[in-house]
Image (cartoon, rainbow, N blue to C red; front, top):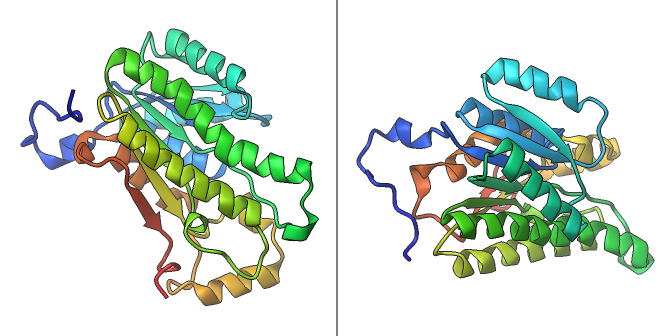
Length: 267
């Protein structure tokens, strides 16, 4: 079976961006980039289930977004590092929220820590890689099985500019390596899954989330010097890109990695 093609590729372009009637799942969706992805998908017409590990206000978040967008929003607690658990969560979402279907999955959960490479131990190394790399695989596995069953699906992985470069001056070898692994994993799945799914990546640069705001001011000042755009990205500036990748506006696009970084990777 060839890569999916919409029945009418000539329909008006804005209608191709609509996610009306789609069911989407977003990991790491309770805050930061993930919360904006949930918002954007719902604003485009999708019903969205988001997965979180630690949060105290998911009911309020769901209610607020549902009122704002008019779409169904529901939160599910799970752990992307646990293969059996995330498989069960996706099955629950498919059965109860999606009425037997999932159209879009966003593997977005991620963590970062600054550690000197000589100071890693088994626990600190495994923590980053289990979320950023293993977590992408287990999310992809859960979504991919459903996509293959229904004959079509769309997986988007949140990678990072760190997948292709080494950020300075911070030391984050595990983060960089895990994001590079996630990127290559997504490319591999894109080739393997062409008969039933598209797989693409988004690689943000510096984004104003807790991952940044908890860093020392001197690091932020250094990063701003390195960004031609001279500012960091608001998470809301990313949501339209995820909507594009999730929509029929780019059905011939698979195995791609889109960088959005204010010019950071150009020099």
